[in-house]
Image (cartoon, rainbow, N blue to C red; front, side):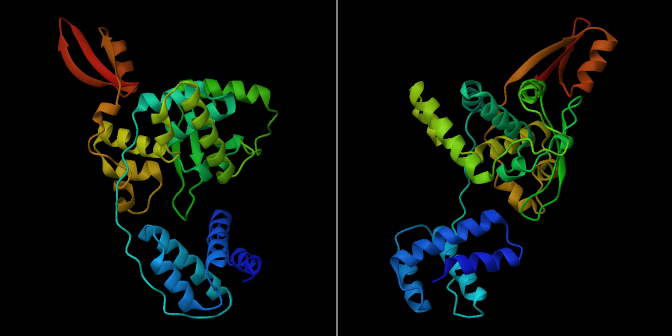
Length: 290
């Protein structure tokens, strides 16, 4: 089986680079373990393989692409994925990883936490996509989803300014010289190093996509609006959005009390999206998420 030819066919047919690499990896696995010239042998190997239905479906899809690249057909088996929701980790654990990471990785993770973008979308960001005065970021949607805007918090903007002082970037320069695979690998090494240095094995359970899950759940519990979260994540279907939201994550939100006495202070609290708790003794008591 010539996997290189399959990759070239996929590239000519506008498949994403990440998809091409994933399919090539799956095809190499099949090639090592069964006779890929015979579709029935491949089907039998996949059926007997001890793994999840999701992984079996990925193997089937990869082999199907291989056959399409050669204008061949087969009776493709169908494996039903079992839907399982992953709950985001506690925010303080994510903040701990960010605080102990080196500057560039800390910036990447802090941006991912603020924006909730996919790893590949972060790799596409250029300097001109970011308004350094307001923190507004224009995000190019991956996986055929819609583009959108996000906003960086002041702490992340401060990290970004420090980073830019060390890099000579023009407006069209990509912010980070990496692809999504290297980002994922570097994150995993950073996370594991911090977990071992500080004897916190629970950190090793935090996946890169958990930053996106945290953004979704937190935004939902703050707004109560599913459509808003859908827009923040760039989804076309709310069913995709629901997979990122945990209904039991209100404890993940850390609140900061804000007290306002004058009309100007009240106006400023409203502009900062603070939530009114009560009014007493001529003062307005607000809370805002950290």
